[in-house]
Image (cartoon, rainbow, N blue to C red; front, side, top):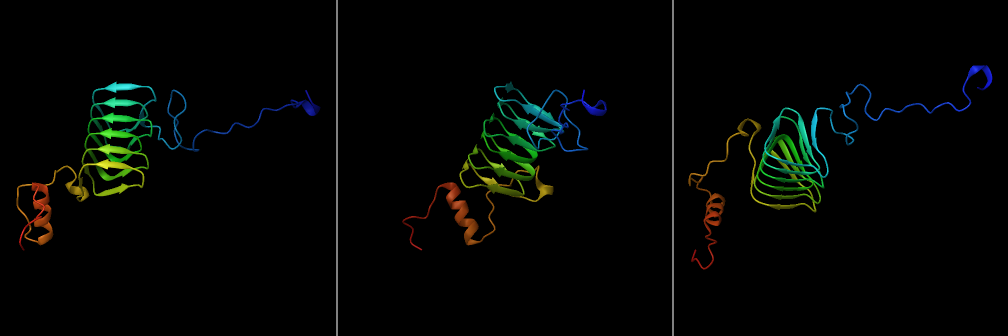
Length: 176
């Protein structure tokens, strides 16, 4: 005891590991910026099957199966998903083999790898990301509908060129 009944070496003040006023997930710590209502597939963890719900999803391990969330879905740099991914916002920094759709946007971070189609109103592909597939952009209200491909074209030269490319006709050797 020091003077006036105070301890000689007081403990340092406790600093919260989360934002004040924001709930903390039970069961320990979580990555910075991850909301408390997020399902986390931890590094080294493996899930086979479907993950569905309203909470966000963060994949740091391996998932084989569909992920369907009303919240944000993040495939971290060490995460791997083999299956379709659906969410409000989908961020791929790891590896995804499957189609990705989002109500708001899809983001491919540097080092992210996606083999599959993207369907979202907004798409951001960062330098250093790898992508093999097609991008279908639509209004948010049309997000659940796949793009029509009934062979009809708008008649413009650009759309007929796209249709010819899709069918494998490049126009090489044609007399125009």
